[in-house]
Amino acid sequence: MRRTTALAAAFSCVVIAGCGGSTRLIGVPGPVIGIQSKTPQAGQKLGFPTIATKNTTRVAGGDATADAAGVALAVYPSSGTGTHPAVVTIAPTDDWQAALASSVLMSGPIKAPILLSGRSVPSATADALKLLAPQGSGAAGGAQVIRIGAAAAPGGLRAATISGKDSYALAAGIDRFASAARGRTSSNVVIASGDQPAYAMPAAGLAAESGEPILFVNSSGVPAATRQALLAHQNPHIYVLGPSRVISDDILNQLRPYGSVKRISGPDPSANSVAFAAYRDPPCPFGQPCAHVPGSFGWAMRSPGHGYVLVNGHRPLDAAAAAPLSASGDFGPQLVIDKASTLPSSVLNFFLNYATPGYTQEGPTAAVYNHGWVIGDQSAISLGVQAEMDNLLEAVPQK
Image (cartoon, rainbow, N blue to C red; front, side):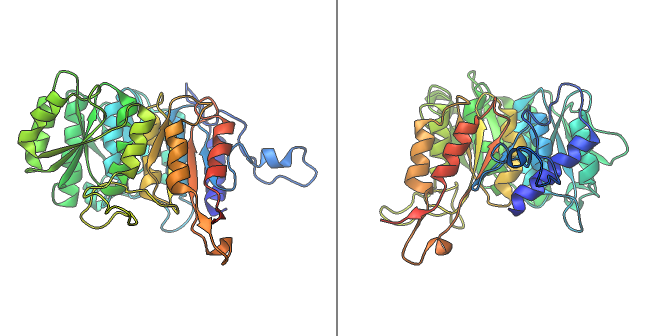
């Protein structure tokens, strides 16, 4: 209940502050605080089941800018000592590649939640930033906001700006900034498609959780900015996210001079996200429990007791908006759906195989538990899919 209450309060604060322009904060009726016993439809007005069920919480933005504001305030409630972020990233709404790459700034030591902005600042972003009230980060040179590319930021705040002539250069610049804050480059790099966003989206959650940067290639090859960034990592482990029809074998060959190269893929965006969520390098021993261990790469999510973040592949900016959820709370990988009304079979089977907790004669209080985050309003992910996810994450008697 703590997560649900914090999120409802966060939404209410932003709604009170106001939202305008093209950004809709809540695409469905939002929760109302202080419902009384005589109020008709009290449960629905409190946000159940539209915003929350027993195992899920929905960030019900009508677009990614609103989702980012809701997520930032869920991760940093900003209502007491120690609950404000030191710095906030403001990523561009017109550059999904740069927005995804900025997810790495949510990893330590910067820990910056992500807000989204165009050439002018949307009110949802401005209002959330006022509530977040960042005081400045030593890891970010004292900046209160980190501005990515041409994204507009409110005045009166100390800002660090990461510039680049295109999306690939911006991703490389974000990588340099994160490496400088950490004091070293990472030994792992994720390479994603700069052409097909649904295949790249799951990288945002891992970047936020692990600090492994996202760099991009395209159908023409490996851009110069990506090559230079890989050289700076000094022979890293390179993990290519997506099947060969998205990132060709020829591109893998172009990457091999810069480090060891391995592909993680599924035949469609949903299966691709599941493969990424279950992956670990080195591989898990056959027949033994699989978990992330120091020195390994990947989520290795093959057991219950975790968080999961559901996003729609047609809203790539939602992956950036939701990335802070993968780096805090219940630390969940991002799983991609293609249709708002359908849970893909690959995601369904992932939950059935790896996520449904079982309990023994000790009873359900001794079980491990899951939590699911649903990103976007019902035009992105339907209430039926949320209810199905809730049911799949429920602890059941072990046979």
